Length: 238
Ligand code: C5P
View 1 (tube, rainbow, N blue to C red):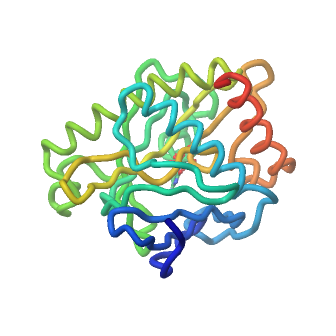
View 2: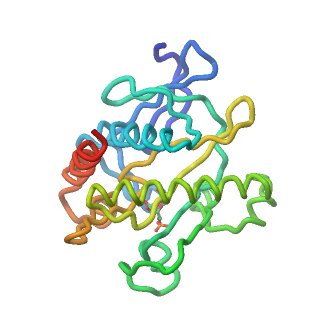
């Protein structure tokens, strides 16, 4: 299959049609944005690293029985994936206190949460992807209560699998965001990407941040962090 007409450009990826109407090609860019695109930049090799990291993680999750859009990695920057319509919800899981939740609740970043926290945000750039609840999601037509139940169940399973994987790589999975889509037959599939752009990853020994917070907070060694995560995952998964 080859790249046909351009379909969509997101902040970090582009999507292209293929000869097969059920399959699209995702191209990973080096572009980085933060704070609802108020901060913009590029990170050397980020597209390649996120493509490869995401591929490793999708394959790992498929092995664990998670339904995903992933078909195959095509080259350094591209994946072939099943075409889905994206459910406009960001499913966020928090194992540690960090980021927007730390801010919103007036808590210091870094503590392990005694419970796994599930947040959902409405994917709507104009509104800055607001935090919503299940009832809002139903009101917005983003999902039914039944679908939400499925989304939370798969998300929980993904969290358990990813915590274990990253720990083997010497990383704490502090929090992450995933997105789901529906295929032609209405099946709910994990979509988008899982990478240091979408996860907070802290070194087990030193607490060093090895994720997009290095870009968001101008911590330096951004590209190096993405390479480090890729190298560590490659070591545990091969
Ligand atoms: O910003 P916040 O603390 O709510 O982010 C929680 C987690 O979700 C982080 O791992 C962050 O990288 C991820 N996230 C994302 N895309 C967004 C918002 C958050 O990948 N639009």
